[in-house]
Image (tube, rainbow, N blue to C red; front, top):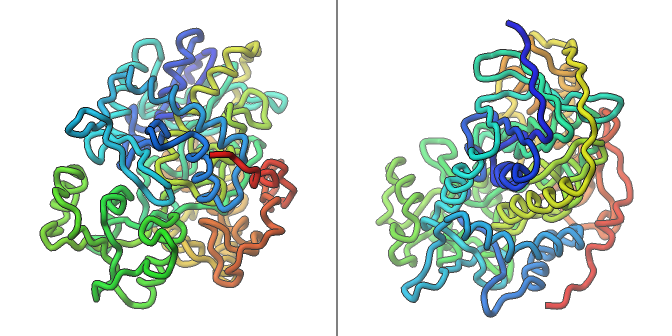
Length: 530
């Protein structure tokens, strides 16, 4: 089948909130093409339940929101990025209001704001009770089709590099035809890598594709040890069965053991609304001690009305809402690390930009504050647009040769990889288990880091990308000899001040990470006046 070649000004990979909003804004002045691995809008943004954090209430402020973000991030955020992203909140919400997103209101017609873990006040806007992502994405999907060429079910294989500059991508379309897309700028908005683990809130598409492609192309990645686990994944029929929003605890839900004893008592002053890393660790340790963990909703009136989507999910899994006890386990939720980028999406590679969960801007530090993900995705899209539209566009080139890939005949299955990551590099880590994970991954090194090619099936490429993400997560976790935020080590349980100014980098296609000073992290303790 003959290869097809496209050209465009700007190519966007991914169709979550970051990718869609960037496409909508950029297409007002530039030719934009968007490719997405599944159907348009599928992915993690569409699944977001709790809402989007925005400090627009009378008793709230942008500075207070920033302080909460820094506190949750364990002193490891990029303070300037935090301020710049949060300062976009009014602009973001106005854009969503104008797009027709109907956020929930109370009896007086005022926006009904909820509170989630580590927030000092109610500032979470939500829609459809617990279906915020769906309602936002529904409106953005309508708009993106107006001026953007969209290719659905398109699998990107690798970035096209010309003299250390990104000049486009290679991939296969829905019919399996090889395609090269040449562009003046490539924007990766491909999400995270939650599918590394068997229990995850992430969509099937979250297989680290953007992270792996960027690394193979020579872009710098950072902070890959910081994978956030959500404390409350519904656990039914012996497996993860979907996310139970943190907003449930914001409305009065309490985590209890099988004896109905609250497990967060004495663990943190905020108890069930403590930062996610604290709550997830407590749930995990309670479960590992042999006790089942439940999210008690007995004190939440009108649960089904407030959380209709979750209620339907519980019904589908034959969970009796009237009993008020929902079985939970922690699950992989959000990658705080990723392709190093500033808040405008700029990476260290010319022509390559990264936004949303694929990027690591320092916004989240070592632990993401609840409902800051939709905020950052939207903010990074708007800031990227400002930067790209004020830069001269580089000329597009026409080299279209496909590389030859090392091919591993014995590729592990997804379930085998997930089982090993669960056991050896999961929510709580320890040196010997991490070394076992590294040893197992080492047998696939040649396959992991070679260029991709047309000989790989979609499933083989997915495993290839997940193996690359697993390698970076495992080795970075080995190197960081402390516990900080979402990075939990049983053999180094304390947070070490000397680590606060350092980051673990993956660069120049090296198979081992490099530890270097990170000036932005060093400045993260800058005081912000509320």
